[in-house]
Image (tube, rainbow, N blue to C red):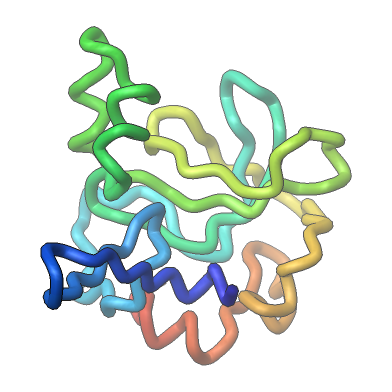
Length: 148
């Protein structure tokens, strides 16, 4: 599965198919970029609570995930976070963190300034290089996030 393209088809009834795109995997073009989206694809981030670093590979203006996942991730006291920007992260394998990707609300991440090399097996699928401040998107990704 080319999971970074993110199209998931779900059967509805007997004959209808509806496309769902979760976890910032949608190929829908994000233009114009809302001013309140603080971070951009290609920026290196640190997770405030868990301490891992990684690189942003996508964002949604609010959480787009299966309802069951959202209920598990956001208990009643944190329901408001569902309506905030969310980012898909490739987690730096050098951190030794068990997961390879994450989908997190904006308030849980911060930008890492300076050179931070991200080691992840999917880096070349998303990025062609590093310009000293952020990773350079592959053309297919730049078409989805033209303002990042």
